[in-house]
Image 1 (cartoon, rainbow, N blue to C red):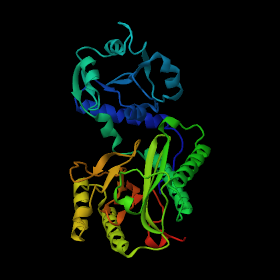
Image 2 (cartoon, one colour):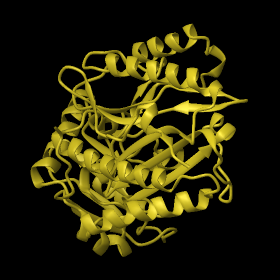
Image 3 (cartoon, rainbow, N blue to C red):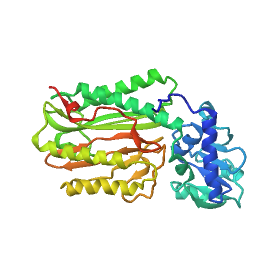
Image 4 (cartoon, rainbow, N blue to C red):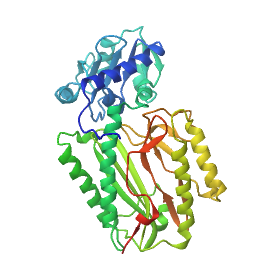
Length: 385
């Protein structure tokens, strides 16, 4: 079992992450690496922030102490959260007079002829002023792909919170109940549980959501349900619960019914569960993510649902709720132990509704195991009215 973890990363965890990144830097022939993406800076430092127009940069030399470049007004904030040993280099403001800009700070820290790695997400404007010879290489994203046991524990805790939100939503679900009630009460339940258990959490990286797509609207998985929309007898209803708990994320989704299962819902539900079971069977170390997705989609097509497929089989979890590895036919990812993914094939019938379960799943040494543990059988998901 993966024990849930609620505490910030210990020093050895931070050191391990930095060592992984430096190993990848050496492979790419880099003298230093510059990260400006908030998720990547958080991964290496435990520091979450909102940059607005004032950029932050973590400059990582192949050897020596990393440097955090940030606006002067943020230094005390950073010092209260940063767990990586860094030197601080501040700039005055944005915009700032010559000699006091973030560009000046970058030039002071990075030698002009250095081989500098940057993220593919770095803006063209920031690339234009970055010193050194640039090479786009997403080495921090690559380091984040395989989780440590500590990270798996953090995601296990986020999974617990997501399960609690789903349980509250199902408890409240009755004909006539509004979306506003389901969303508000379930999110408050998750937030309240989380705050009591992790009182010093960073709310900049703590977010919770619970929403239900009722009836036919569940066939549009990325539409937005109306706050005053009411549940009705029957279904299908698809509930999505996501939790980012102090920096690590999980999700759980279920298709459920009120009072009984309409006859035209039984077969798509059963086929969706069959595709989901195949996903669990195929997700294991060494599996090509693209081949997992292809096999699951072939099953759905063979069962007659070629026109009811809207998306891939799954995606990764970590600091965010949507990141590599992608369980998708266009993916080049090969699954490894301690990657964390969703398994969520779906069937979408405009005149009936949507059918999808999703879980947060840890790749183990010989297969996979769900970190979310909410009931998934039809007998548990037909609610009394």
